[in-house]
Image (cartoon, rainbow, N blue to C red; front, top):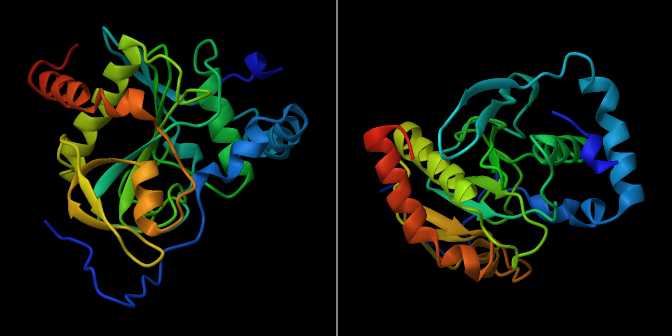
Length: 246
């Protein structure tokens, strides 16, 4: 069934700071749905009518050494208005790799059915999904939704191997985040807050880091395998910026 589904402003660290637009919502509220075939089928069916016949993500281009860039933005609404992007959160969902853009479609449909969204996604074939602009509010990482954008990298577990093409796809998104929103390609640094994380150094951070610094301690993604590759992804993003190829 699954394979058939196509398509240097820092947050102040002040006691009692009330971030009024920080929703207590997280993209991994969908993990239980994605790991349960019956719940997944129900969620997919709930959005089928609203996105069926006219649902045609636009293929922007295909990049050598990577995959295709699919633009879903005309079909997707963010969860809120503009944010000041202080960093990019690296996630993984619990979705196994599928042929073509099917895995990206599954993620998009389930997020939409649950009133959630994330900005970007990648898969093992090096495909990239652009769901919404990175400077719009999405419910993807509670404790940092108000000032962090995010990318879901298709993996069923944190132990899955990272393909070379997917690392290039991650680098492509890093390039875009830097080019359009001034997010440094480097690894960022977070600090603790009360129900939210703070930003000590802008850059790329992990969902586990957001959760830990916000005091939730309920996330472990994207895992140590990806964390060990974050420097390499930054180097690839720099190369792409200079040569527009991998």
